Image (cartoon, rainbow, N blue to C red; front, side, top):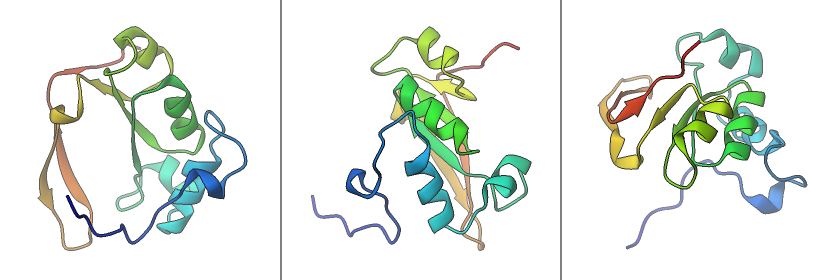
Length: 118
């Protein structure tokens, strides 16, 4: 399979500390032009979704001010929820992009999910 490189990326070589340190997600968020305060406010066009399957990555995404979709693929649902995921789904097949807007934002639908209880 040949895929074009993404226009914006962050690689492990660009950050010193691994997850749960949020540097990788902070860098990615900044590269797409979204400040942490804007992401945390939930302002339209400033919401950033991190998709993660590991508790350390979920914690990193939350610490970077992002919303996190947890995948229950490599860890238990309970550990993904305990790490702070905003939503949890069974796997990537449970995430569907159902629309794209002119501003570049996308609408998604989550299937096979579990919602954290407050």
